[in-house]
Image 1 (spheres, rainbow, N blue to C red):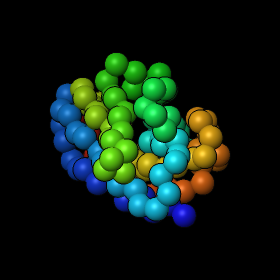
Image 2 (cartoon, rainbow, N blue to C red):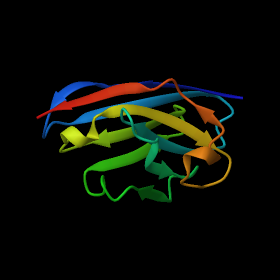
Image 3 (cartoon, helix red, strand yellow):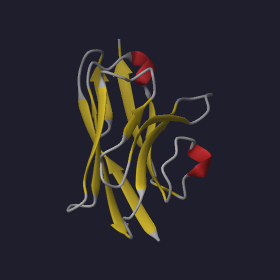
Image 4 (cartoon, one colour):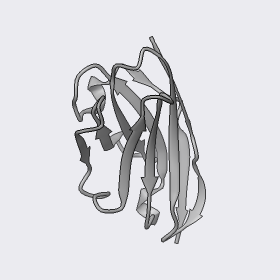
Length: 120
């Protein structure tokens, strides 16, 4: 079992930065992903990182602005979000999967989510 707890969300202005954290407990031999869901929209992948950190993938909409990283010694995954836009507003979730994959339906464990709101 894996328990995931996100933190770091908040209300910011366009152009600002935020760093989300996801603290994991339990087994941590997992690919980790950040996903987001805006009102009325489907949950979508934001960024994914392999267990070793050697492989990452990003949604086209966040490439060059967001960076995913992990510290396995601290069992924590981060999402550094720079140059935030109003369209980044959503609830952000971290999730864990056994295999490296991008689709949210393939992830086994989910956090409760943290709200990110970007004002224009």
